[in-house]
Image 1 (cartoon, rainbow, N blue to C red):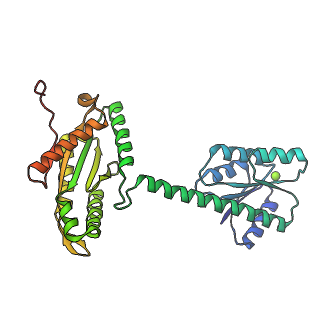
Image 2: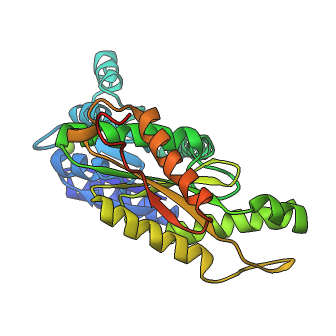
Image 3: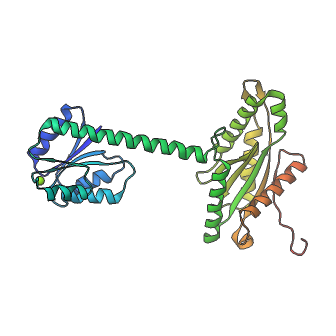
Length: 311
Ligand SMILES: [Mg+2]
């Protein structure tokens, strides 16, 4: 574990870092508060810091205060070193955001147990962050395929449509469905069906650009969103997805299983569809998907608006 030692007194700095290294810590040192602050505000910075009270540039309590204001995710456990020990100073230091303080000259054993207390706090907080991240992933991801779940996909699509309206750009929305998927399940069972779903999602995901996204809409149905494309580009992307899924069979525990997908493409353009909400965009993609199914499956169809006056 890394510890930052910030003290303008070189002798004190070197002595303290020797002690900490002897205890097995990796030590980073600096001689003023500005450097200490920069280090602590770096996401990869030490999580424990021993800060001298009186330092050039920025003093110890102010470093504490500024670190708290920056509010970096991983907790910083801050110990102030002071030669002052009046109650007022201690209160000032702690209310500036320090977790603990030591009065110089300090007893090394006292320092050791205080650092240990800091480590406990940091370990607990890191575990909390990890647990929260797992919850977050579970709340946004489809556990079978690893792509986004329906809720997260809808939220993100909404964000994309809003952005497109604001910036006057387009959004390609594709509804995709594995053809005759029920037969896969009926023939091979659900485990193989699950393997097919996973591999289908994985093949499609590999083809996406960094700003595209894919979600599982339910059952064997997926949504792929490709922002900033023309209708033709969206169709090309749909074709690539269709080929990636259908070109080679999928290796499962029951042997090789071949599936194809049908794709419906809708292009959202604010100039044309400015008033269209999320449901309208999905409805169009769904109609195009239905056309793909009706025309023999394993194909990509672009939604064509009904000519005006013909509705
Ligand atoms: Mg000093």
